[in-house]
Image (cartoon, rainbow, N blue to C red; front, side, top):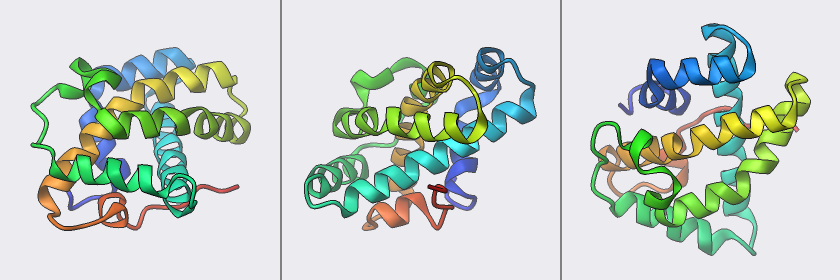
Length: 155
C-alpha cells in the first residue's frame, strides 16, 4: 500500500461505495469526488504536519502517531465499521483538524462548508485506516514517513 501517495492509499481504502457516497453528497461525478478527496486529504495532512510543529500540540500528535504506528494493521473494511471511536488518539487529533481543513477546502472549491464538513467526516476514519496500514509497512518512521512527501495545502 505504501508504494503510492498517501492520497492514493486513502482513495484505495475509501472504496467505490464511499466514493460514490461523497459524490452524491457533493452532487458531482466520480472525478469530482476524487478531486475533493485529494484536496481534503492534502489539507488534513498539512494540518496534521502543522499541528506536529506547534509546541502546544506536538506532544499530542506525536503520541497519536506512536499509537497508530504500534497498532496492528486494521482488518479489511475497518474504515466503514470503526468510525471515530476505533481511532484512539489519532481520531481525536484529526477530529480537531477536520473543521479547519474542511473550511479551507470549501473556500478553495466554492462548495458549501457544511457539505465539505460531512465529506471530511466520512474521510477521517479512512485516513486513520490508511495511516495504520502505512505504519505497518514503515516500521520506525514518524509522521513524515507515514504521510510521505505529499503536497502541502495551499493557504
